[in-house]
Length: 367
Image 1 (tube, one colour):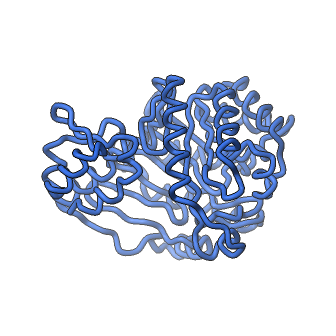
Image 2 (cartoon, rainbow, N blue to C red):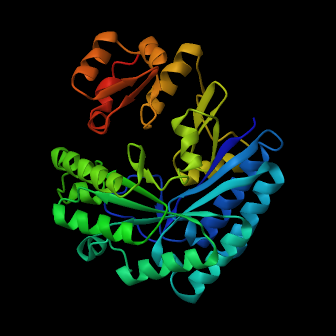
């Protein structure tokens, strides 16, 4: 496979956030981490010579927890088992507290030297109260220093993740966070509505999200950032011109991508599959020489078209009007147009910003 996106999952975190439902594990067990990373490198070997990497993304979890020698081993594996195209986008997710001070600057230097050129900081909020409630042990000054260090070391593409709709935050609090993020002069922003999943600590505490409030904040962010020259190119993502996330565009355009590590998903040709979720199960399978995923799914032309349309409707460019009519009910398409949620221009159909808020209703009619 040529020009795929490679995702590597690093499930380790210093502690679990109260809202988190991802496949992560809190605390740092050196032995477990050693076995896990060895398993990921073994999984890489199963794909030797079968793919050319156009984008690389380390997510988690907290990839920035890894030490320099661990990074060197992982990158040596990637370069040894895959062809990597020149000019590829290499991203890692990072927690500001793991990159503070001289040790953090040194770690950033190692990452840049290994080839990483894009970094995504999970800021979530610039509110001191929210940072405290999340159990984050860093300050606004730490955030500013770490972003500045990444810039000085050579990261020319920096993203900040923000979450909106915290039940204790006001609209003013959100606007302050958004303005602080814009003041960082980064190239990319990702804004996600808070989702409180069952069995998470926040759910146990009785916190709830307000979808109406989140819809209002979504539109405020859209108007604020668009007026400032940002491209709102995907439901949750904004970029300076020329800095859209090339890796995530693989997903949204339904291109081929390979996921390594526990819980990671892949789509290769007309087959999709996802690795087992539990870290221990993943390590055990790799140790026994058993593939890390169950029940791969094969799909035909129609199913591929349906999935591609659903994903591309997340993008500002939308989809071909012809393809949309091939997979969605005509009366539903017409209704979305009448309400201003769907815009058809020439041969393209795209959702308006308010249409994005109701995209699940249109997508439910795509069969």
